[in-house]
Length: 399
Image (tube, rainbow, N blue to C red; front, top):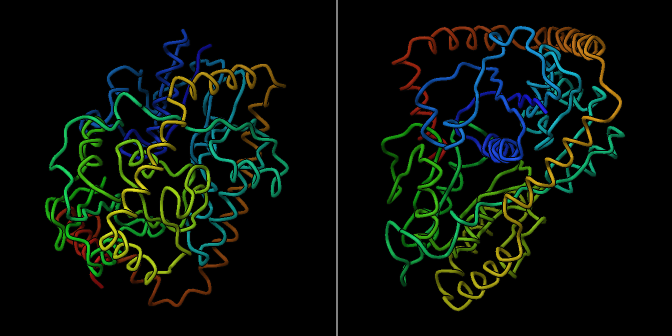
C-alpha cells in the first residue's frame, strides 16, 4: 500500500516517536510510506530519531493531489485536515483523548477535539482505557495495538552517565509549558524530598535550570537509555497520558517509577509491586514515596526487581508494529470513508467551534483579552519570547 502518516510536526514527542516506529516497520514490510507534516520541517529536528533519515517527508501544502491508498491522522488537528489528502481510505490513530489536554475554560476547543472521534473514521488506539472511552462515549469500535519498545536500546546493560550507588538519584522527564505534564511540580517535589540528586530530561530547549544536578535537553533517542540507567526512579506526575511510555522505558533500564494514577498507567504499572502510584495531586504522598525509597534500599531493590520482570514480559516493536500493520490492512478493506463527506463534517464542526468560541470570548473581560493580544505580539519578537518562555519554565518548578 501507499500510506500517508499525517502528523503535526517531526519534532520530539512521545506520540511522534510511536508513529515513526510503526512507519519504519511498514517500510520494512514493503509499503510505500510518506510522512505528511502539518507544520514546517526544520533540519534540527532530524537529529532526534533515525526515522527522519529514512522516511519521505512532505508538507501538507506541497502534497497537491498525490494519491494514497490509506491516509492516517495521528493527532486531533490532523484529523480536522485529513480530507486535504487524496486517498482511497482514511483512518485515525488515537493516542490519547486529546480534549483533556486543554483546560475546562476552553470548552469549545474541548468539544472540537472530541468531534474528531465522531468523523466516522476507522480507529486504532494504543491503550485499553482509550478503547473503552471511544466505545462508551462515541460508539467507536476501535482496534487496540499496544505500543512496543526497542529492547535493543532500552536494556539493563549499556553506557551510563554515572553508575548507580547508595545515593537515590531521581529523574524527572517531560516538556515544560504543558500543564498536564506537571514537570515543574515534579522537580519541586523531588527537591523537597530527601533524594540525593535530581536529574532532568526534557524536550524543551534549555541550557540551565536551577536546582537540578544534571540537565539533558533535546537528547537524541539513542542517548536516552544511558540517562535512565544512571537513575534509580523516574518521577512522572502527568495528569493525562495515552500509553505512558517513559516509566516502561525506565523499567527496561533497571529503574522504578513514582506516578499519579493517570490514565494508561495500569497497562503495566502495579502499585507497590513494580512502582508507587499516588492519587492525583497527592504531593505529600510523592515526597513520602521518595523518602521511603531513600530510607529503604531493600524496598527500592524489590520494586526494581519486579519492574524488570514487567519489562521482560512486554512486547518489542516488531511484535507491536506487525499487529499495527495488520490493522492497517484491515482498515484499508473496510467501507471507504468518502472524502467529500469527511470535509463537510470537519467544516461543520469547525463552524460550530467558531460560533461557540466567539460566544465564550464575549464573556472574557476586555482587559484580559487585551493582555492576551499584547502578549501575542510580544511573543513575535524572538528575544522577548525566549526570555519570557525561560522565566515561565523556571516559575513552573519554583513558585
